[in-house]
Image 1 (cartoon, one colour):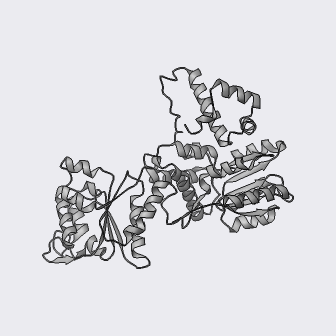
Image 2: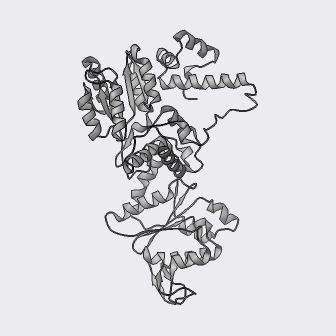
Image 3: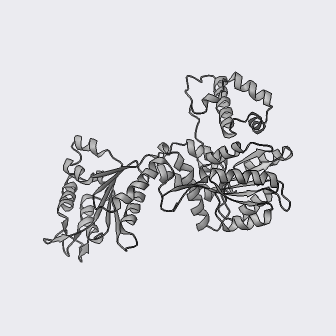
Length: 445
């Protein structure tokens, strides 16, 4: 797996500006297509995949806004739009932001300002074979790079992490790498969802007449996963009696069906997963120490989504794309405010919660724009110390400080550009920065 910069669709009729941007994109390693009119750009956008569109608003045949609206109406997965505008069309650009555009630049602008926007654009981060990759964060790319090394070994593996972080997805990916194109089974079972007797019957199978209702022989999951992978999810929820039976099956590589006497050899790749702290459970006597060391030869720890924020928008755009492709409805785009809300939300349910959030918003939103109020039942509250901001005035000052600082970062600390965005004069912005003690050295604080 390798990362690469996204492909840019540049729509600019000014030859001097177009040449300047093209040259800089090439130097920075971006792939791009440059169009000087709307018609060929629209054709390309409907048939190619771009990470971002950079479009002038005023074009010879159609406006950038018409391109944007036409793509929305086609229902294709819409890439983020950055509009280039003159002073006379700033109001139009602001309106486009409300309709789902990512950002805008006022002519004339410095190319580095545009490059900063591209670097900050999470949706523009692409990964080769993205359907197979686990994320764009360093943590998930590290796991991605580890899996091929583990695929060639039959070592037992334990995947840990909070509920919903994607433990089964990692297990499936490892299985795919290990088996290649071979048609070998991947069998998963949630150990915490079944009673002890049901789990035993599911894992080991049973003989005819082993218990009331056992009218025929049934192969267990160990047998069904032979020559493939058996994924024991939430293994920490197993009872002590089941832990003994699982340990024996792993050590001896053979099982005995319920009600049976004959040992049946099985050859499976065993992957276990849990959201519990098994080490702590062994100390407390709640999990067998010998089983813990048997399943924990290799440990893959998946961080919570809030600890790898780089993956949030990457995943959100994947979920939106999947929704659009499976529903022939209206296109859906996230506003910058929505993206910020998604990034700042703690996601206690991790990827599973994010997926449900996006799907629900796509269903409930009557517009193509997914605003924060359709993403969340209750909008995330800004976190401030109640005693520090006891008065309303202090709270409002804190809000103003945060919003101006974010706007400055968003616009690469370009004062005039930020002032235009905020709807105030350059002098007024300087005065507010001085009053609120906003300095550039706070950018990485």
